[in-house]
Image (cartoon, rainbow, N blue to C red; front, side):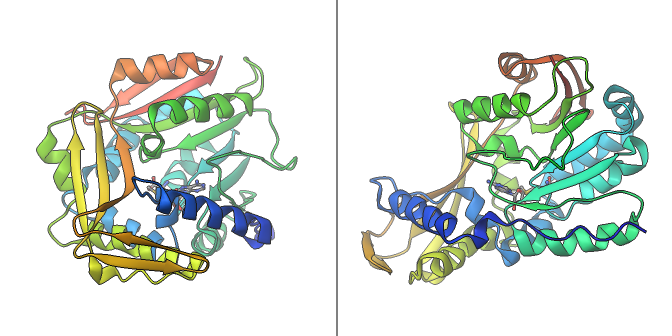
Length: 325
Ligand SMILES: C[S@@+](CC[C@H](N)C(=O)[O-])C[C@H]1O[C@@H](n2cnc3c(N)ncnc32)[C@H](O)[C@@H]1O
């Protein structure tokens, strides 16, 4: 039995990285349009709330993507080839990758996530179920750089990035992120590639319901970011002072999530403060939606080669495999 490889090299254990996170948060909170990066949604409770969102009637992406995987997993496995080094970006509970282990037969599984505790628990369970697959979890923020250790072989790397998480970046950042992934892959012909799940443009009503469900789980997920920020900044946000707002911006083809102040208030943190007026918003997430042609051009511009795409019957979601070109 392979020993559990659970020494999580967490960037968050280093004081300088904590400092970096604090200064990034403060400059975003004090900008004229306040914002909090969506990566701060994922403390242990945020990760659990995201799992609950995936079970909601209104949240079609997870279910729709799962149908595409179920219908085309053999074709995907043939495109990828057996024995890949499967690098799961934003692995969460690792369930999506685990569902593909049987067909992909990865040589190594490398789940990467910013939510260190949640990742650790997920991988512990997974390693018990799949003792024959070497697993190397990495707790890190990959938004600025993706520094993979030398113990992750470059040959036949497959970046797995499902759930349309790429859509949280703006279009330029997404392009730059894909370029970084391409640079971390081997030269063309050595089996490297990317398997992406992307949400497609669809009617506004479907999109807005998916990000503002009747039970208020997405609202709780959005509000919980304030509790996380309180711990990181020693701030005094009170979630009761804020309300969840989600809407589709048709021109930008993205769903935006915000937190809106219910009254005039002052938020304080170690070394600073900001006044928010009633109705003022903190922008917490963008979820860009894609078109088939847009995906193809984006991958081509990032230096990927041959691309195959699979869709559900309603064409609400796409899974795409692109080879390192
Ligand atoms: C929307 S969830 C998707 C989880 C899972 N991959 C899925 O598709 O259901 C996004 C995941 O990415 C992780 N994440 C978000 N931003 C990240 C970042 N900058 N670096 C590393 N992980 C990140 C979160 O902790 C979370 O587990």
